[in-house]
Image 1 (cartoon, each protein chain N blue to C red):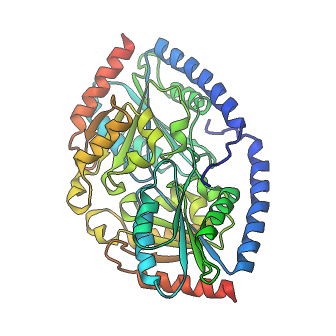
Image 2: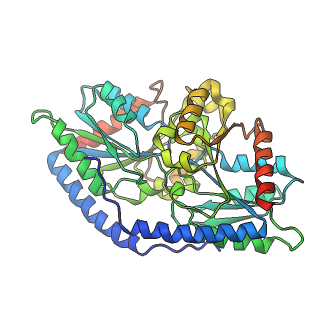
Image 3: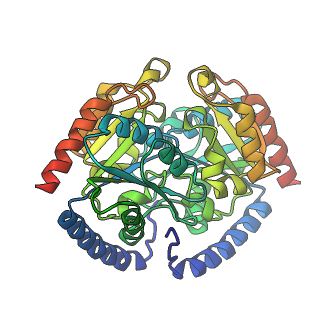
Length: 227
Length: 227
């Protein structure tokens, strides 16, 4: 009863996107720019996590951010206020970003950068959605996702692909662990069941707790990408 | 820079779906079954809200539930344990339900019902996603969405269509209001800006707080549908 037809057009869209993503990744590698694709549910704290990450990395990496949003620019303005070069990508109702949209965004970011300050780390804040963004390779050097405590420790069971494609899982809002039925150990096991190679960082973006190890992971990843 | 191409195929998919949805709605009206499409982000408490709703409505309406999930059956099993006729719809990675999938699910539910206990209220628990499900008419008599306090009071700014298409917005997890920067009045204003006709119920599904007015709303809606 639950079998569902899949539009055949999807296959060709994915193949085309994969080619575009690989080309973009090669271009970024040549330029020495590490692109991080950051995904999560709505309201799990992507923008707050970015703000904390930028504070931790200030002076260590030259950064810029692309904020994808369906219809507002509050996130780009928040980044701008922190002194981070930021552009807003309006998706016009689309539920994800693909490699082509990402390439357009990167062109916009390059226009903000100066020749003597190339971008080490570009972060793409994807649309808040645990389903569709996981299906589209954006051309990123790595994928990270945020799972926040109030969402529950069972999300890896329910949104398998998102956890499979994420190199890093940030478990955010650990400050409210006492008020939710959330078993951190059980959550960790479920994530690793989907993706044994996932690196997991419990954090609280609001207070900055746990941000240092995540920032160090980024510095190492960027340096490895540039070498 | 943020302008994004839209696959032209989408338009015909929507038109075909709208026709199918209208036909399903007429069929349900003739049968006296009210179909509620329940949407939200991952982890906002759809299943817990359904459980509380069923408890409040027991003996007043004959109910059944369809649980859409990408790849698990934990939700249908939870409903089954409460004595609610339930089926699980596996979407196989799809990010939303359309009218055709919903019709398939309803056939499955009808097979569970007996001739002397027709279904007054069928609830479709949609895929956890604030974007795509809003675009597809499922054939429902009404749409409801859940916004949970930890997601933030700005969600109506960021996911406009979801709020525009929802007849009811349940603001869930109000028990944790003291631990989050969430302004209930401001949230209400933003919802009504998107949809002045929205009916808003602040609830705590876990404790049952606020569930009664929502259950009463459902009883009235079902009776109006059947008359």
